[in-house]
Image (cartoon, rainbow, N blue to C red; front, side, top):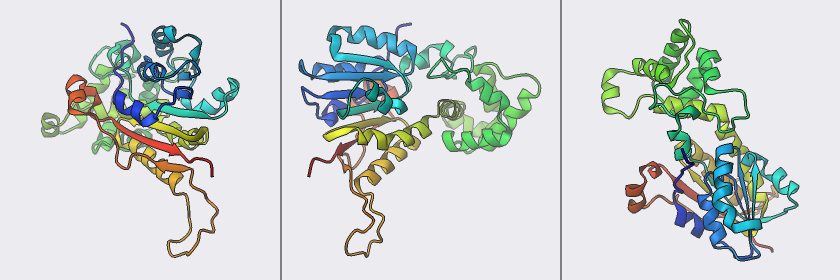
Length: 315
């Protein structure tokens, strides 16, 4: 299967980045190279794009897609949390824009062997974004305590039946290890009341999301990385982040707000004495959502939200 991933909120991201023809840009979640190609098409001869991704399949696909842009493109296999080190290694200081598309690619979802899908009963419980790692979702399912499973399904899947699902998983694995998506899905299905299964979405969706987030440390990486990315922006540079669920969006919204207004002084203080200085401004007071046209063409874009932050200029 070829690596495919429709770049959601494409035009909105290009507009949000306010691309300068001679600028240096970073795509921290390169994927198939869709957003990166859009940036490169808007750059002049002096512009440059650095693409980062931890998925080897994405790297191969993006390298092929972006080959026509020649030496204006540099691709690095890494996690975007290591962006400062990647830029240092390339001799790059400040950049004019950074974008992240935090969604799972269509390729990852549709390739059963990658283990992200609950729709293929025989799919392994893998879910690794970076297949160089040894740990898989199977290890989480079969070794985490009931309390740990409850925590991640509750917090990362936001599933109100988290306690019951965790209990059923532990009970089932006492009989035999849970090996496949189909086995786990049936366990989850049995944990949820029939009347809820009849009216809600796929019963396994939230648990699979929770396992993927836990395995790949998605939320902790995002929260730990935003401030550092803002610090690498040149004056007027922009950080554009596309999220796909409320947990991610909440982190982005909070970090952007704190970067805009970091002051910790009580509201009744006449002047700021904490010394915390704003790093810039939030461009998107409300998240940018997909258009009706995009939703009709790509239903997987339904939960996407784009937020943009701009680094303050020189005083």
